[in-house]
Image 1 (cartoon, rainbow, N blue to C red):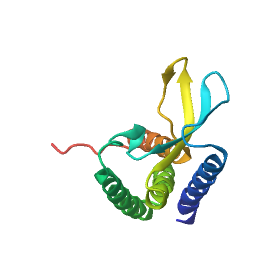
Image 2 (image 1 turned 90 degrees about the vertical axis):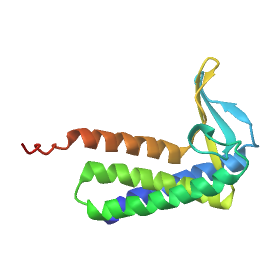
Image 3 (image 1 turned 120 degrees about the vertical axis):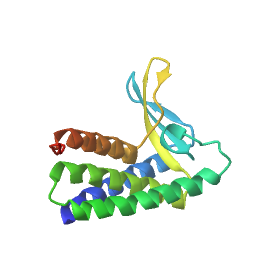
Image 4 (image 1 turned 180 degrees about the horizontal axis):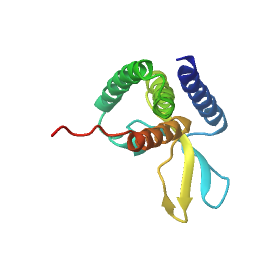
Length: 156
């Protein structure tokens, strides 16, 4: 069990540390071009993934906080129940760490700090952070795990 929570803790620490660095180095909306396809920025996301419902008037903050809290409880239960399933638990641990990192921002700041900004010419992907990255990789591992599981033979 400890290794799964350690993975989550590393994600939370990296997420909070990188967000702290960005908050100290950048004013809101400031850009720093790193390559022709990647910028460092400082944006505040008051919604969910890709700023979904960011302009909903405020109710979404409580809603996403509640959803995240429930997800953390469910993921913790699944980690305890399936602790021997390595791929499944690695995916869950990454999602858990990302969820906690973004929840911390939402509770302490009222928004999530995003700073990784990829683009091709003038086509920009929404800014994201370490927590979002961990969640995406974790979900990918969970999907991969779902394809690897043997399906029970249907009774006739």
